[in-house]
Image 1 (cartoon, rainbow, N blue to C red):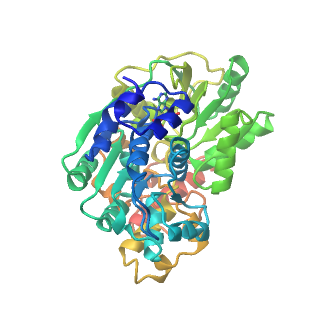
Image 2: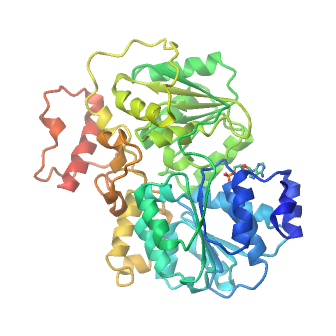
Image 3: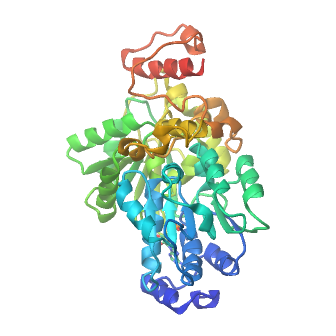
Length: 500
Ligand code: AMP
């Protein structure tokens, strides 16, 4: 099958041909005719499958007929992160170059004024992160009653980030008779419930299981210690023909610390995580894509779903506490038929996380004895298993979301958010699923995740505000804490105290 067989208009086919793509990917082949035909689509597909073009191409086709009215976008695409939103916008620019469609991007880190001017002129396509969109709605700057096509992309990621209440709120503002295209890499029960509510007789298209790992990716597990990781990484960088790499850490502050250490060692490194401002994130990603930055140290929230072709190595500097993240992380390499290597550094404390990953991918990760560092110590670092994955990118967004749910229009702060508040339209990070006991069953995600539960407001770098009346169990354990872990323990205390 070729793109010509899909029923797309000639100007779109011309733009596609200019990108060099000749054959539609399976999701494109299956979804495009249904989208053109007006059906709702449930696409179970992850990034890398060509899913973005599977909705942008037919949307451009459909939207090329008709005109936009002021403040009333004709279509809406919801993305969990700014980067993904920007990536979709790029797709529209590439494939829509011969169509005169107008587009606005409502994401944090971009000034309200510019976006409002665009909205005032009328847009065919509005691409937004949920929080920022609700801010604009609250300010009366955008009316969603004219939306004919809604796309909810990366729905399971939205769930992880606590955006589902926002999406439900947004959907209430949309017309009932609309076309809905819904994409998710996995279908946990909460997502199934959403699709039952928001999709009307959808065409279900499933192209790849979330648990599948690319065939071109060589996976290597190396057992090490927390302190041995840095040397191990350096050794691999020195020994191997390493073109470039994404190095994943579980915590934002570890991302920054590692990036600084690598830069200090004379390596070309950049960092990306949710606390960095948007222009820095964009600049760093561009630098990595162009080859000016060789080592990108990243958190999950900032890097998931990004389309960065040609990554030779991925490092799980920390074993992800959520098994599906392993698949997404290593999927950054071995893309588009290329081969890649994914190293995972595991400490003695990572056993249960590794077991969950190996269960998900269906086989053990081959182990390699490559650690020059000392063997794992007998005693476990007490705080690590409980806190290692505690990135808190979403705390501010979650706070704002709760504020909105508490009365958006009555709340002046919500109705007229400051620029600073708006810039914090950060993706939230998973929280409850970082509790070790949840990780053993990666598919079962707790329902209260949607409401922003324990740990959402924790801030790694904030002082402890109090204990409440609850003493966390690990404090009662007779373990002598080494100095360097004090802060992590404080985080636990803070999270517990907020729960209490
Ligand atoms: P996505 O899954 O939308 O993130 O797309 C993954 C990558 O595949 C992007 O770099 C696209 O530009 C690329 N791509 C999309 N469609 C095709 C196609 N039909 N043939 C080859 N590459 C494609």
